[in-house]
Picture 1 (spheres, rainbow, N blue to C red):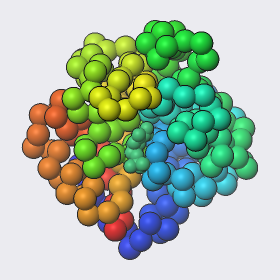
Picture 2: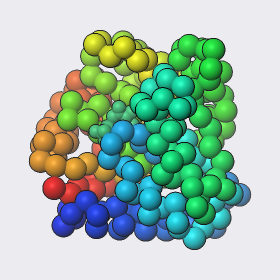
Picture 3: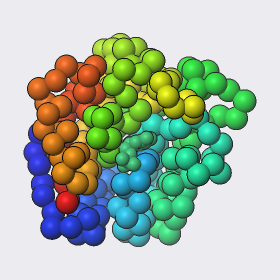
Picture 4: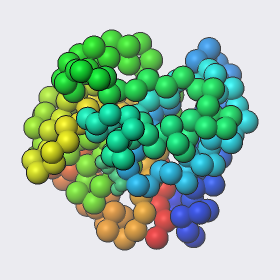
Length: 223
Ligand SMILES: O=C1O[C@H](COP(=O)(O)O)[C@@H](O)[C@H](O)[C@H]1O
């Protein structure tokens, strides 16, 4: 794991957006289309704001989420909603986006339906992850129902996850998909998450799922 410290969150957002735009451009030099997986949650909004203005051939970029909460796309908890409002705008509006939420299906049914399509886009060209202070990444939550299956070496591309105490179900890219990405970035803010990412490196993967994908990842941190 490589750690880059930034003076503040604004600088991080601009620098990381530039770095990712450069990686996508590079990948586009040798591929007709490239795949880019991104996190939801509260952290990545400002990165998306900068990245959406990047001058690259967005029409050849296939964007997907690392995970989704099982809510309709207009729900305030929807990660797709965040993407549509903050990333898939401006120049980036031309990108192709594969939503994971399918109305009328359970997260398990959608995982089965969409996994072959996601598989055809692997390996991910660029992966941006977020993390919770509990060391979950994407929707790989410690102790969750479905975690063992999603962490298995032969897991499908997408897996359903249910977290005790959360009334909203989830769907997540499996550990295999995250680990296999050509370029991996993790963005975290604050001292609590920084301590968590350090600690995760010496814990079993089921206890600290982020630890399983830190190999060859660059961690971008701001206070
Ligand atoms: O629930 C989620 O949490 C993580 C971390 O979110 P943050 O609000 O602490 O940045 C996020 O990466 C994931 O995509 C999301 O579904």
